[in-house]
Image 1: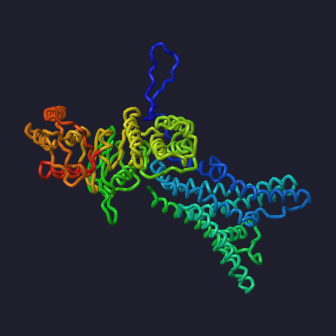
Image 2 (image 1 turned 90 degrees about the horizontal axis):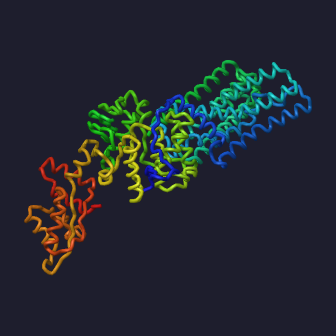
Image 3 (image 1 turned 45 degrees about the vertical axis):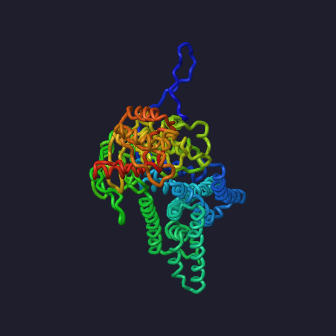
Length: 302
Length: 330
């Protein structure tokens, strides 16, 4: 039997290893809020492969680099050519690289939740002080933060570059702030959609495929429909079609309220009324995803 | 530690627990029942994770319905199924679980090192769990249940999937959880035999109903059965029959052998009243000049408890039913 017995030192011998036996713990127990924060930081680190194997660091780090490199190039070009404006607006950047963001969400959302489901680790969490909602909030916040880091970092590169090349401070700061609001909204929305899909399946591969399908296919379909609407002269429909894919949804919100140029055919920005609908739909989707996740985990429970 | 009061849990099609009232004190308590008897359901309810349909229960003096979080802070749980991610090391995993229980980072690391050492994991604790044997995984599962120094742990089938040596080690470890660590244990199993050696108290449930709740000493006193096998000699061509007759002359009745079971005709079963029964058997066999091939204590299968219990209450004698033990002794 592989248990140690306390070693007693025979008289006469002075050097001995003493097994001090079992020690209880009477220090502080920090409770739910602390556990939620711990889970948040562990998940956020995990979303970039930190604290995991070398293999799992490759993809998130690579995608992070892919997101930042074009921004750096743009800044370099703007500095070199002494341009008066960055070649791409802050708000356009995430939309331009939406495929990279989608890929990141597809790879990391299943990582965040499917693992716990597949290896049945979930019961270990719920047999501890945290509740279903704590778990969901920690995971949701962690993935949203991870996506925010991914999308905000290149904006920061652009902003710093713009200031260095002495483009107007007030103007740049305003646009940078608008860009940050836009990617924050995008992060919440993508995290919610990614997690809901990933939480349904314990199979990681399936989760990845499903997230890509939802994010990329809806975008493709919506863009196509918008193009058709444009050609056939139903430009009024373009804004409404845009409600049906996460990327165009964010695009609509920012072109209505955050001074962005819409990327849809014809560059039609939604009117204020349509913009309000966009915002409401976006917020409803985020809240809906949260609600679905809580419901899902109530069921998985133990 | 635990007190339930007509606790019931009904699912749309099954009644998992049926008005279960039981009191469990400190120490190691075995919860025995066949698969589907309601053991895991009871643990889930006691952890405050699944509401009871009716009735109430208190764990460590806290109400399960309203103080679930407070209960879970002071209770550990080791599930029956696999629950370990393969790509992290035991240390990382247990540290994370300790923090989930509210331990500050430094304390979590210290407690993890201590606990893993106590359950018998040394250098291997830095390797990914995926490469562990079943025995090592069970130890990690136990460690994560103990890492926050709970007052009580629920161990759901901790010996599942282990070989006999691993089983004995796990049972010894469970014993130590109480004797050395001072943590009370509620351990489930469908094998009464292994719990008899480990537990102070055994609770038997079947079909969600309480069948029996008594201390282990009561259990063994009423159910110790001796199995004897003897050789034949020229003087006694049927040694088994000769011993049986000689024993009944001295007032010790043997049970009927389980007819039809292999080797059953050569094995005598009798109830040991105490030390004197062993002496008596020895003397009888020696007087007859026969060789004693074996004399052993039968371990009891859970089904035997069920059958003896029903006859005990119905007829006041469970002797006939003990032949059931022949087939699966040991």
